Length: 446
Ligand code: NDP
Image (cartoon, rainbow, N blue to C red; front, top):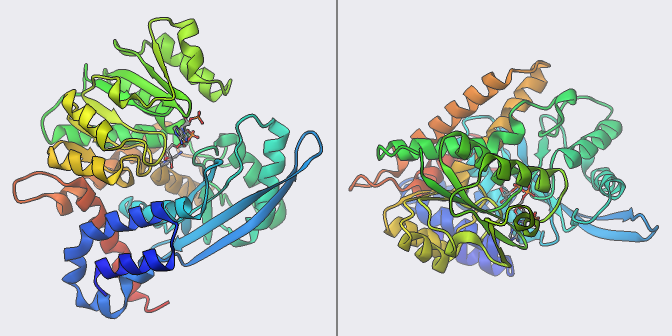
C-alpha cells in the first residue's frame, strides 16, 4: 500500500480522530520517498503496523469528591510501539482528552523517543479529568483510582509513564506511590518523580531547557546570536516557564506568555521580578495570568487570545497545546519579522502554519525534535534508577545538551535540501522513522 492509501484507509477505519489523522499525515507525507525506496517495507506492511498502536487500554475511573459525590472519568493508555525499548510517554489530565488526541501523541512519541538515541518505545495516556479547581485530596484519590486500573500494564521494562499537561510532580508522586503499593517493588517505573524517591535533577527543567539548546543549534547554522532577541512564548506551565527562564538566562527577552484564558504581552521583555512572580503564580498558587497586570500594570493582558498577533518577535516558542498557532497566526509572525519557530508543545502549529514557515524558509523545528529533551531526561532518570545512583545537575544538563545537539545533527543529516535549506520536519521524521523501521524489520511480523 502507498502512504496515501494508508492514510485514506486509517481515516475510514478510525473516523472522528482528526488529531491522529493530522499527525499520521504529517509524518507519512515527509517520509514517502524513503518508504517507497524500500520495497521490503511494503512487503511487510510496515507503515500500517507503525501507524496503528500495539494496544489500547480504556477504562472507567471512579472516585469520590470532597462532598462525597461519586465521579466517573475515562482513563486511557496507548502502548504504541516498543520496537526499540519499553513503552514510554506521558500522562495527560485535561477535560479535552480523548482517544484521538492520545493516539496522535503516542504516535509522535514513538518517533521522538527514537530521535533521542535512547532505548525507549512510544506511548501516551491520560484522562478527561481536569485537575483545575480540585483539592489536593481529590487529586490524590483520582490518581490512585487511575493507577488501580492501570498498574498491571506498567513496569520499568514494560511501560514507563511520565507527566504532561495537568500532570506534574504532585500527580506523578501520587501515581508512583500507588503503583509501588500495588506492585510491591521500588523500581522507578514513572519518571518525573520527586528527587527524594528516584527523580532526576533537571527533569522538571528539561523540556524547556532542551528546546532552548535545540534553538541555539538552529541559530548557529545561520550565525545568529540569541542575545537581545525578542522571544514570544505561549503557555505558562512546565514547558513554558522553564523555556522562559533559560531564554532570559541566555540574554534574550521574553515578550509573551499565555494560559488557557488569555495571554500577557511584555513589550520590553519580562524583568526577573516579573518572571519570578509569574512562576510562583502559575506553579505554586495555581493562579491565572489575568492577575498579572494588577501587580505589574506595564504588562498587557488579552482575554481569550493567543499571543501571536499581539507581539513583534524574532523567535516564537509555542509551548501550550496542539493546534494553538494557525495559518493566520503564522502570517502575523512572519509579517512581524519572526525568523525562527521552535516548538515546546506537541504539534502546536497547524499544517497550514507549518507550510507557511517552510515556504518562508525560516528556521522551523517541530516539537518531536525540539521538545525531545523532556523524554530524553526521563530516559536518563530511568538509567539512574537502574543503577540506583543519582547524577549531579551539571552531569544531567551536560548530557541533555549533548542529546539535543545530536538530535539537531540527525535533522541536518536527513533534512538538508538541495538549496541548503534545512527542513527539520523531514529531517526529524526520517531519522526517527528509519531506526524504528529497522528494528521492526529485524524482529519479524508481530
Ligand atoms: P502544563 O499542564 O504544565 O501547562 C500547560 C500550559 O498550556 C498551561 O499554561 C495551560 O493553561 C496551557 N493550556 C493547556 N491547554 C490549553 C488550551 N487548550 N489552550 C490554551 N492553553 C492551554 O503542561 P506542560 O507544560 O507539561 O505541556 C505543554 C505542552 O508541552 C503539551 O503539548 C505537552 O504535550 C508538551 N510536552 C510536555 C513535556 C513535559 O516534559 N512536560 C515533554 C514534551 C512535550 P492553564 O494554566 O490555563 O491550564
